[in-house]
Image (tube, rainbow, N blue to C red):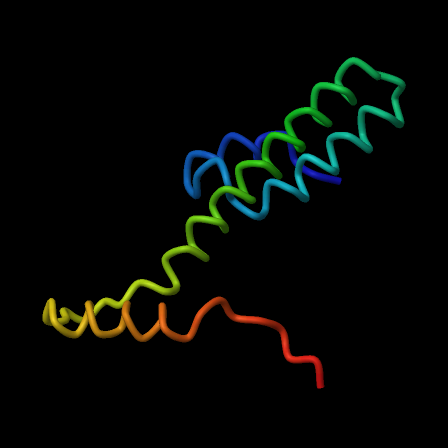
Length: 96
């Protein structure tokens, strides 16, 4: 079962989106459910839902940055890459 002191410590050290918090929140939900404290069950269910939304946003930003070229390019290279992408049109799945 999770240690109730780990949640604030994990948040402080690693941030609100720390992956270890999922385990802690699920443990607290099981703990409160086992003792019949359904108010806390719903509270931590909401906390877990908010944590999931936060993680989804973090990964969406990270995914968007995967395509960012970190090496400087000349303006002409950027324009040529853009025009080439436009001439190829939208990508379609292969129906092989």
